[in-house]
Image (cartoon, rainbow, N blue to C red; front, side):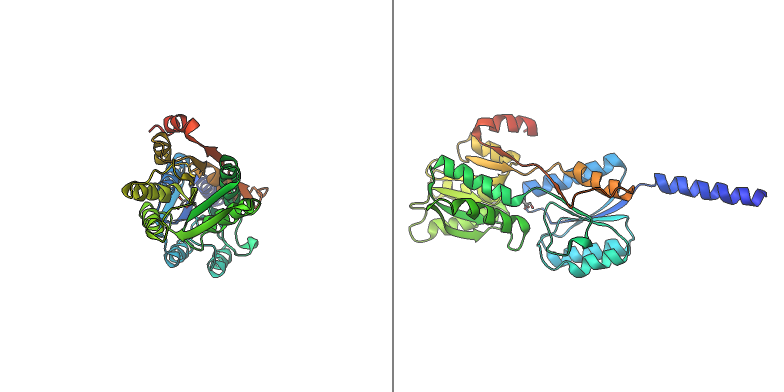
Length: 312
Ligand code: AHR
């Protein structure tokens, strides 16, 4: 009789302990290539701490192979769930299959994979194609549909690069006098943006006839602005400067007259991600496959307010 009570008590204790036990979640992050990425990482760590989650954080430094290694190590560590911000879209089938066979749910954050949807629970991310369309629509309105553009592309093979370019073209193709003259990758970094812009300036005719610069993120645009200043050009005046992210430094550039528009990509998305992950671990199954993060658009008109919001 007593022995049986002890077992039940012990079992009871275990169940309570198990229920209260904080989740251990592996997070495979892209790297530190931009101000946005750094802010996103900081938000994930802070939100995990707020919720008592043990977050195993890995930085792939934009190396896809290293990211797969990190996910495999999470599987070996028997984490409760895995969150991946994929460096690139392709090559995920085997790794996601391994997580599934280990019974570990996977959530895709920020970017996307081209693997079968049954290999992950949900994607929590903004609409990168919409961001490209918003940038082109703003430019079409600002130039009455007549504008030759040079484009700073992000990391090749990454979802934001693919979709921002597609979205931008989807709108500019409606305007016979709008076209992309040159397009090259700056890898989402300031140095990369500066290097690509220096090449564009050094190329035949330089920026002659160029009405705008469309950058896949703010950091590359900020690098391009530096290159244009060094070449004695007037970014924001002779060329309209348009990008994506909405990081504090782009509002500084807007107030200095060097930048004209940025589509905001929210970086404080930890709450959206962990709501889905913890909800799923608690048994919820009513999530859409794509949990959409809303976008926004900013110009010099609200740059001061955005700086205040960022506390910068
Ligand atoms: O995946 C989102 C993109 O990744 C951001 O726009 C960019 O800053 C980062 O490198």
